[in-house]
Image (cartoon, rainbow, N blue to C red):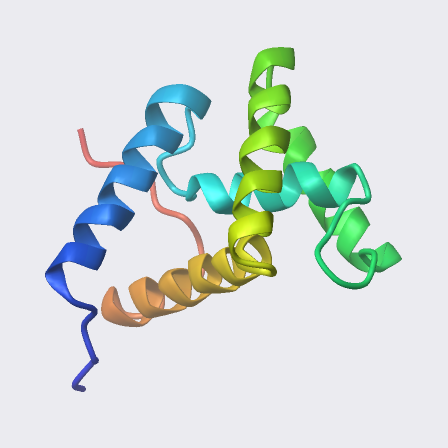
Length: 120
């Protein structure tokens, strides 16, 4: 199965984004933009139409799992507002992209249904 790969510079930016999420928010599995989507949606802030009740419930569940400190929440809201100002819909698209990466990774690894314990 052939997969269209992004340009290398874009891969490096994504790696930097995930590194930032790992270092500052202890979430290497998400991008900062997706974390911003959670913060903005929980607060009821979104580009375009306000988030639906279902989106808000999903974001609230995800955000409660992340359990950000006050400074992290403050940072995510500010970063998210900047990203949305520069590119409206950016955070929502980032969430969809993270879900697509998850699907591609599952397919690559043979479609594991249950998360496996890391090999030590």
